[in-house]
Length: 382
Image (cartoon, rainbow, N blue to C red; front, side, top):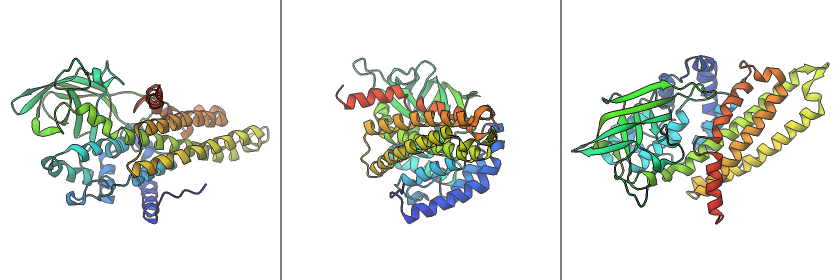
């Protein structure tokens, strides 16, 4: 079906990104899979294209584009190319918005030019070994000592943590027994600060080019000048970007579901069983027809959510609905596509196997499907 939410400028950007990925990413992707990282040089190349600084105001050298449709196009084109871009989407879609919303002028002058050039990469550290969705229960602490906070604790499952130059760490600076959400603060920890240790790159079943690490903090002295926003308001700040974070995950899921169908169509036309192409069997036709229809329905939902987000009207409950539906859709579609590949679908040289492994975590990170259902049910007055 025809999509109507993009302008000529958006489509020009799409063409540029498609060409860039075909030239710089696709030929190198197997190497990225082997090393488990997207090289820093690739991020600098994206900086030269203006991608890493799209949302940064023009006075700091950025593009000044307050239009998430450009981010959506980047996600769609990566999926179309059957590649992943490491921690890039987390960096520009999830982390940079916190700096845009809460950095003071001195911090903007210090960090924004590096975001624009692609020289500075970020991650955000919320999850702890004993705390997942219950952010208010975190135990990492930061005690004020003069003009520094003394930070102690550990974080895990931190996307982009291995390469990050700046890590937004959520820490408890005070405790309110009447409301556990009070007293959390966002501190920007810089790579190389004494006591800040980056652990091993965790071995995952999927997302092989997206580094995921453990971080530890032992008496790390973080300047007050590195605090984002006001002390004690971290929990509420985290809610500021949740709709965009969940929309980001949903759009990536939809893009990969569509890519799974496209690559499966190519395969079943060529693969022969019992003397004829797999595509000629009625079951194959019906399965792909059903999946294509589900994807069109998901696309309509995604495009509506994208339009509402650009207009500043996407609610947390609606973002939860989009993430819930599209990540679950991705899981169903990729599983059915792999089935049509038969035994070859289980072999990693075929992209559908990697897509199958990559798909599983989208129903977990950014809030599990169960958390999404809780948010939605509350919006229903339940």
